[in-house]
Image (cartoon, rainbow, N blue to C red; front, side):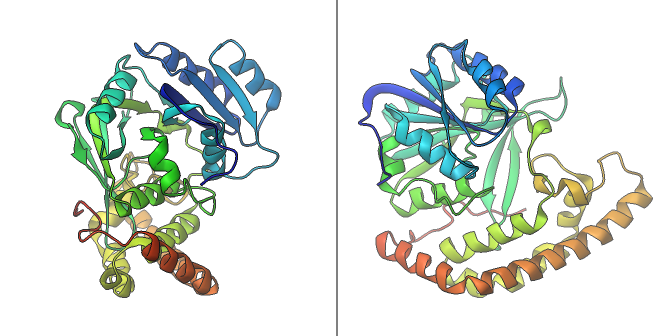
Length: 348
């Protein structure tokens, strides 16, 4: 149970948005929320560092929005926990400051699904668009044997109540009761992977997680923060695998990682900057428009960088082995893995 939480109202929906700067993007997000056919009853913007005055000015025009300040930078997981603890709704709509709910019935559709499906903890859909005017696609997340995520792009109309390994917290509606039941976000995930961990805990505790295009929220990835931190991404993937994946998979992790690194499709995606796939490798990849010669160089460079990152990740996990194993034992004791986990087989 998270400290300081308010008693929820069954009829209320609270939106929670962590933000660090990006006041102009936040205004666009808030405008889209208030244009919903069923707008959230309250919007809690959690300031996790940034320009205080600019954020105050961004939030002020919106009557349902209020600004909650953290005393120091704590990361997205802790910021979202603080927002949920201050919320009063039985349902919590998690968004990012660069999310745009431009379908006016997105929240209404998500609320109706949770009302009809009591065993579902979270529902949503992250919509991406490569460039203005391009077709929109839903990103469906599949966990790989090495703990990384593979993204499948699907047309929004084709995604209906689809079980998925996890939902990004830039676009999902969550039952507050389920959120607290599993302990909320683990603040150890200071950047990236907190959504993967949360949904894994939902599946462990017997809840389902569904993607549905009718609940879709556009995620404008052009403004992503912290892209390019390959070491952090690989550490998080490894920590997640050690915490949640079945023993037979964790025992074979080095083999899975080598296979993943050597797969030409993996390196092509990294070098080509394919949208929605390993997007946090921005600083070590070439642009999609790169020449064939540059792409060849990029493939070799990415392969070497990936191998070095893996070595660092294993070194990092070795230093924290006792902590990670204790957390794994606690999770297994509280809620053993379901017979089939991840719930959806991935595959490329």
